[in-house]
Image (cartoon, rainbow, N blue to C red; front, side):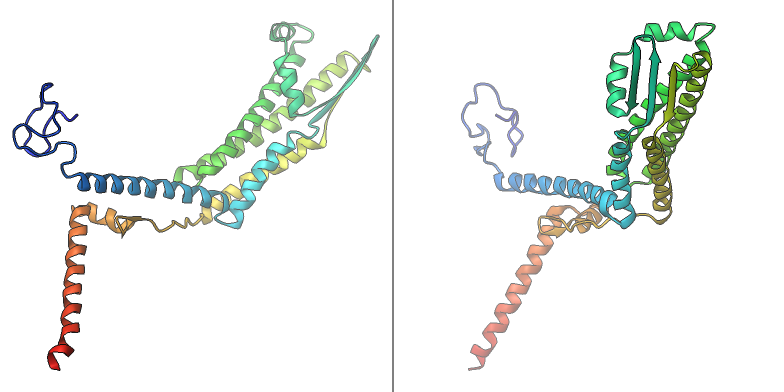
Length: 287
């Protein structure tokens, strides 16, 4: 129950259990119910306008132009490239003969089981320290590339704003840089291990790494072109209480309320109806 009477402002007490105000007698629950329902409906329609605008901007970010569609496809291709063979390694020795193809699935399984204490111990080794520092950097940077690719796919849904242009270019550029650093560090690590243990180890970059680099670099170029050309946003026409939403917002900036707009519309419709009725009476009067 309300704390105050909506008509006279009387403060209701706990003993006032009847729906009528003890001072003015108005029904507290149903007082101006039509106006409140109309206000709630206006609020819902305005919320829909803002939500629809967000949906329209997301559509533009993904499908607003041929370049936007290409960017969306390339974002998936970048993640898909990570499932291709990125590097190939093999170990051979007494009782050991193993080869592995490294991709995103292998990385997930490998990192989840990695003994970081042993890795840091190898990094402190005077013999293996340099090689395993390169190995550690290669792992960190390739994981960073994976993370940036996923983040970029999320960001592309919200790419219609001004800040998003710089953000998208920056994220894609960092993905390219981190992937390139990872490949360089892996190559240096492989050379160091081969020099230390000739014939026991081999490692080479596979085609999937170059596919990822190419796609990520293409995304940078696409985002630069989009930043210069822009993507037009086609907003769906929405209405609030029968008025175009943009008219309502423009009137609000001028201090005109929606109720005033409705009153003006009703008065105009009433005047038109009266004028029409007068015109219909004229032939009858002439007869």
